Length: 233
Image 1 (cartoon, rainbow, N blue to C red):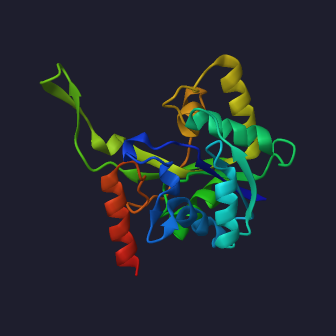
Image 2: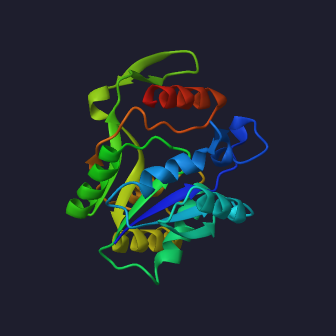
């Protein structure tokens, strides 16, 4: 079984909107629906669980019916942070998932996940136990000496940009969240599954990424998303 967990519990304050950013409509369609359609249409995905901001469950359910997204079998409320929302999903899946099931975790506000990216992260996870989508880092990274000066840099060939989708065998995922909570490791506001895994000492495997797989955080990102949609048309 391959289950996609879509994290859509954020509030989106940086968007300057009065609704969660995943529910902002672009070309008369909510952002979250663009994301879910990528998983609905991918042949390797068996089912989808959406972790949504508390109080927005019914809104999402109405959209699922409108856009006929049949793979979404579960809609649950999220937590105060992204990590808490992912953990909610992991705990929810415990009674219904097998150790070797693949769980694909993806941000609901990354609506342009390509088929080849999703396929590669799944195949790598099936082979190695986990995988994280990634890209080379093409900019130069300098380390601050003071707020205004620098004399040291990091070789960009040693860096990778990591994003969602990420995929894990359920047994590793479940055990890791239980350990992280028990030891209070990797569960901060800025943590995610991949950083938690690294904090716990796990080795992660890189999978393919895409420059189109943008995270919609600011109004400028929405304009970029509209441009990608226009190119696709």
